[in-house]
Image 1 (spheres, rainbow, N blue to C red):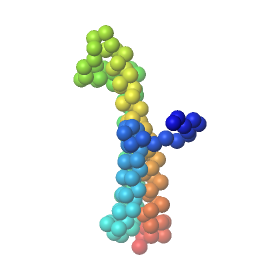
Image 2: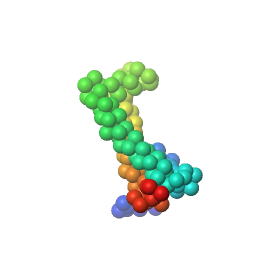
Image 3: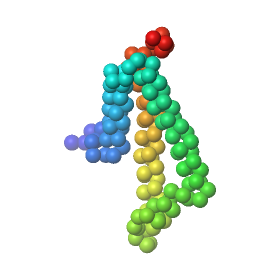
Image 4: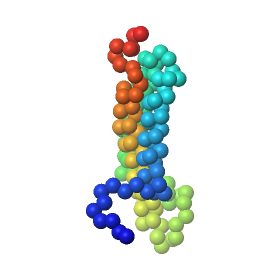
Length: 134
């Protein structure tokens, strides 16, 4: 039976859905366990801040450099043509489609972690500004 007008679907064997669930679980688990394992609380907060900062830097500069290389020299597509096999008559189109599909997955992963890591920083750590100096 087909469901129509479905806004949200979650399928475990779809890579992007599985990746979203995995990264969300990872972020929440780290946020909950870090203040228990790392004491005092300001060290846990510093670790969460560093984690969020590194994801922000990767999302902004890491992916930015890859996009810049792709626009200048077709870096990502050339990587796929060089390292994967495609039928000779479909090489350019198939490599472009596969490169873009993989790019979307990497971008989605980075986006989830870029915005998921800071959300977990103060929400679950139990450390607030008044706890920083205790």
